[in-house]
Image (cartoon, rainbow, N blue to C red):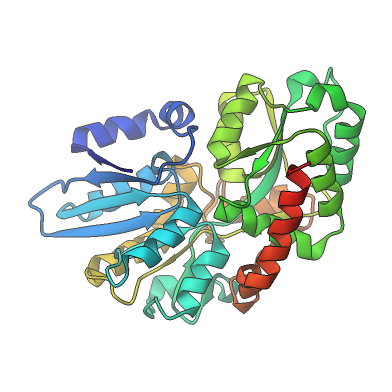
Length: 364
């Protein structure tokens, strides 16, 4: 299903002013196949920029609005997908492509780039990124976000919040009846970012096996978006959410103080949303300008001040910034590197083994 939303400029500005409330109310449903947000130019239209993105529109909207303020003649079409759906749609539509692709599923993004679907681009803004946030001048990190645990603390009866995966497992064991059917995590078979984070952790810690067993024994619910998990958490239908993207968790916790966001003290996995310009993009001029704007200090500060997303540039300050995350977090940060090691996650044999273990756990 393709849903198109043609938005007049005045409505876009109103939407942005009501960003958080719209975000909380409107993005928690199951992911659609595609939602097309059509933002008309502010002046005489001279070009159309087509962007495929895995971020909820209301999270990325402040950046789109700021870009159009600077380039008022550009009509911007933002197609919102789930991360796995975005990857599949890109391949299905070939040889036609959008002008820019953005997603938090780093492994799927990297595979597309490694398979030759991206064009190289170098500018002052891309070169300002640290080496670990770009690869071959073809794919670029645009945000820097932790994967977190979120607890509805209302059910804890003033008990101390778990701070690590081991403490989470112990909490589930002790409160088995209270948490049965009330634990949420990504459905890694259907959600690209869910599979990325789970498979990355699976390679690096023994606790994933114990977590999976605990989730299975306590009838964990599987979700297709962070927003869907957080909505059910705020309603009290679930009380624990695991591996939620920190950007969304932070926004919901500001609105619902009963939600406690926990960066695990044993380690905190960090992912980068990434972007690339397809080799077959029709409008490379605007794609390059938009990429540069996203990576500029101005664009990154928009993310820090007006969006729930975490900017990647170290020069940008704010609570939701890479710098702020490093300074505020007491646990070891474990970023998923943007490089060839991501191909391990997309290896067919490795993927089948991880998914088989997952299916076996939830088929009991």
